[in-house]
Amino acid sequence: MHGSLMLDIGGTYLTAEDRHLLRQPQVCGVILFARNIEHPQQVRELCRAIREVRSDLLIGVDQEGGRVQRLRQGFVTLPAMGLLQTADNAAYLAQECGWLMAWEVLAMGIDFSFAPVLDVDYGRSTVIGLRAFGPDAATVTTLAGAFLQGMRAAGMPGVGKHFPGHGWVAADSHVDIPVDERSLAQIQAADLQTFQRLQPYLAAMMPAHVIYPQVDTQPAGFSKIWLQDILRQQMGYRGVLFSDDLSMAGAHVAGDAGQRVLAAVTAGCDVGLVCNDRAAAELALTTLQTQKVQPCVDLAPMYGRYTAQHDFQQHPRWQSARQALKILTTHR
Image (cartoon, rainbow, N blue to C red; front, side):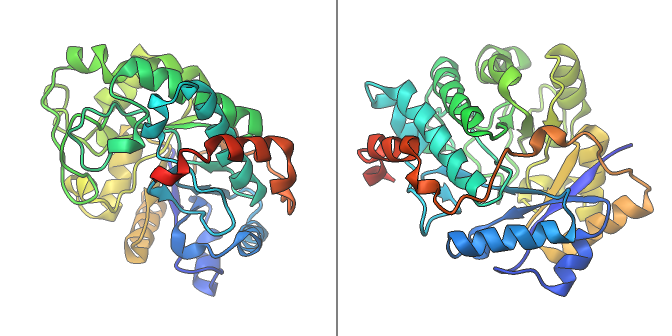
């Protein structure tokens, strides 16, 4: 069995404890949060320090736009993706959003953002809402597809989330265990369409901490039915699978952090994320080590084509994209 761990750090620089954890072969990368970020130069230095510990470490961030944007000071304020659908040139704006987001993130030395959100906004979810590109699979497919084109043009791999769809449930999986009572046929006819159509452009996917009881009693991220039978076999997806944060309440059905990371990799996740809880991350790491879980070896698609560009805002496309998006950024 193979599986790796992606974890976070506490501040704007690496501590000795951070370096020790990052040297462990089972750790494949670092996810950055707002607390790790002050300004572009500091982020570049932090990324450089991470790669000095191990050059093969992945660095990721949540830079969706709207309320989920970790890089702020010195970066363009991105609109919530749900605001794009009402624009006459929505697909163009989505593509420019994807390019600009990726260009700025890659310029810091970060490999990828966990984006785009492929959920459908049914007006029910307290955590998805305007993070989604639209109220139906067709709209989401068109606009998220354009966003992915922009990301790819800048050199960033795409991560689609939250498979097979988080938008129907009202509960927030950060603090609750959402349950989606719909049948597999209903989900396949709606939410799953976006993942199906866009999978050729997704280097990775992230399953939802949502239980779909008509399909399995386990949340999708712990479900062999969802990840192996449906996603891998029926849909033929071959990309990387990241768990959603295993510290979230929606993951606690699997037990402690060690049991959660084992459940995720056993179900089919390549990488387990454990964030905002260092003790939990250490327990997850120890569990992978004692259970002799081998590090994931097929993460090459997740490396971004980045160069640490100090003048990244001088690129003509950056300037035109920023201008095109100005009308939307007032509605964060």
